[in-house]
Amino acid sequence: MTAEQAPRDRVPGPDPATAPEVDAGARGRGDTLYFARRNPKLLAGLAVIAVLLATAVVAPMFIEEGPNTYVGPQAQPPSGEFWFGTTNFGQDVFAQFAHGLRSTFLVGLLGGGVAALVGMVIGFTAGYRGGLVDEVLNMITNIVLVLPALVVLIIAAAYLEARGIMVQSLFIGLTSWPWAARAIRAQALSLATRDFVDLARLSGRRGWKIIFREIAPNMSSYLFMTFILLFGGAILIAAGLDFIGLGPTQGVSLGLMMHNGVSWSALQLGMWWWFVPPGLGITAIVGSLYIMNVGLDEVFNPRLREL
Image 1 (spheres, one colour):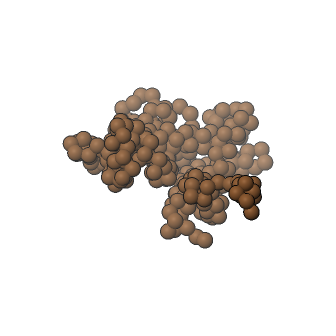
Image 2: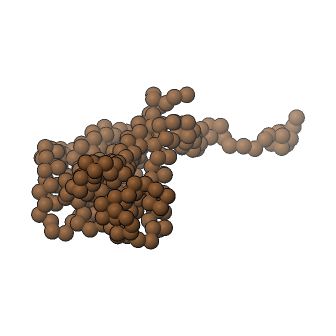
Image 3: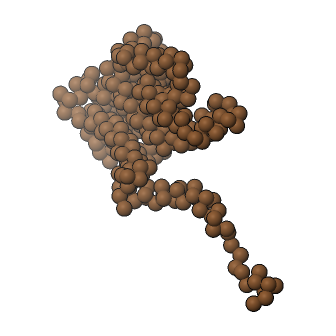
């Protein structure tokens, strides 16, 4: 073989030395998707959440009357006409359930989102900056952490004449962030001493760019699971406030349905269809979220993966 023929016989392709580096990210994402599709906890929780979310979004579109409208005979058990029966006042329980699911998901999204945002800002800032900034933010976090959040929410809700989902979600988010901030701070404090972060500092990048381009991407899975826990926690807190009568003054929620059922003696009258569906709805949402979180932990943590 001559020197002129050798290049023609060589099969073109990527350089073996650089191929693993180029494909490392894609291979990691592929492994994550592979184990996610095989994790029964994640799939089961996701299926339940998907069904309830679809009900919350689609069902109210096909309900002509409002959730508090008197549409039928009073205290009727479930039937073909009224799937979940009616209340003491002739209101459709299924209509209330569908609208209540929507309110519940909205409270979880807004309340959990506010708590996650505040927790990430404080946690990342304290973990990356350290020193006096860390001490001050840690002190503020500890003060809010020891406050009885539910008592604060009850007092705030009691003094508000008009309460809506937005206001309720804001109060829940502003009292639910401390544990998330402490957890994120601990992770950020560990990553802030890594070589790639030191290299980013030496290159002259600003602190917030280092946080969002170097530290946060390495915690993406942890942040996502933290948001799921905050989402479920916001739903539970909102349900507790609604159940004691401090929920939204207008509209309907699953917690308010349970409050109204107890207030109007649904249990004593044997009207189980008034309070059982909202109770099961809250349990299914929160339980599925926590099951999803366990499944995601098994997917993202190689030590917990089941082959």
